[in-house]
Length: 242
Length: 231
Image (tube, rainbow over all chains, first blue to last red; front, side, top):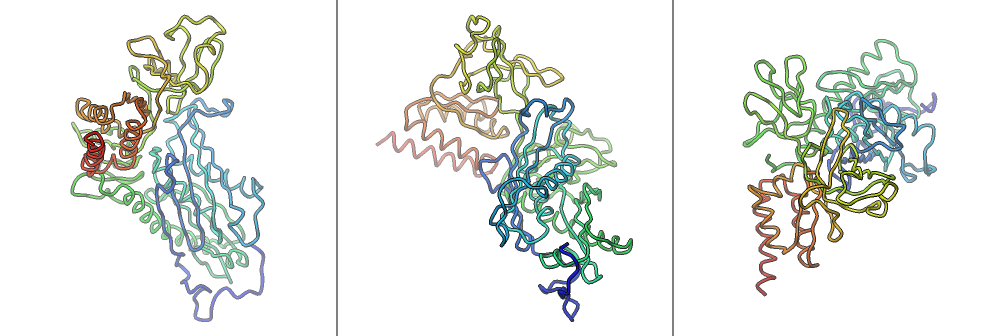
């Protein structure tokens, strides 16, 4: 949230500035197996966002002090490329990327069957090549497809989606202007098959009714994105047989 | 809950996808029971044998089992043992007592250093996933020449073929010595042309080993080397 401003975010006809309806998300495309050197990989585009995720492992966890005797450690590194936004981003970790890496790792740990690989590490690298708001959600979606592509056992495919509030109206999938000048942002990680929520963050204020509507939008979008994820994985292995 | 796609051949399922009711069937690998439903935990093909529903994963990590013949790489050296990279979630441990040489304490580095490749056998895997390797046995040795390549674990059977038929075709066509480790590592040694062709064959397994067109593609590749031999 960049704060309140006098920027008009909804048109007079009730549509948003880019012509979307209130409960319409940006176009999403997903491709699995984009990086041949990785054990699993995926690329997600959502509007102008481009997120690439690579998965390596499970492998021996180093240094050994990070090993857990009863489960695998998921090591997530979220990074925005310097050229991902119009203002150049200084390369390397910053407060925001550390936070997103942490919440993404915790979200993935709740779906990956980490107890199958004690003392090991699963490395997930998320690189944002182009950013237009909602990159953590695109990154989580890409990571989920990459983990499935790598053959890591999971309870479900986690989907990252976000809703928010602009001009006191709840909208799905905020774009850059809505994210900067809107009133609230509610990114969540949803397990579509079980309806569980693996992570939830909220920036700004929502009333209970607004929150319920935002979550309704999120679940609807998660179901749509989940279909695209499944389709991407099947497309990668089409023509195959056991 | 979404259902696995019913294809003409087998069902390809993704993690979280419902395979069917769990009543009266056993849950095998790559699946789990949740609320009276069997759910896939991996991307792969559904297999139902002997009343057991499991998922054959398309990709998976190598899980070592006692007796496996593997191609391993030295990752760390200590005074009396070597830690080996076995291409799995856990490193293998090769104590000097199970090396093929008489090793004095502190002299492990004189026999093998980091990066050396060996043909070893998995001696023991305990419940804590500690893996002990041995190099005592017929044919187990350090692999001084040749090159090592990776294939997906699930394509190893495809690369070997029925009764090692495919492996024999590979050896005949390339005129190379080829060893396929259970851990997805393939060692190839021979002349430059033969190794280049064998590498192509391994790459074909990597890219198309899961496809029904693999056999035809491999036969076409085989003809390219036979033509070269005829000329």
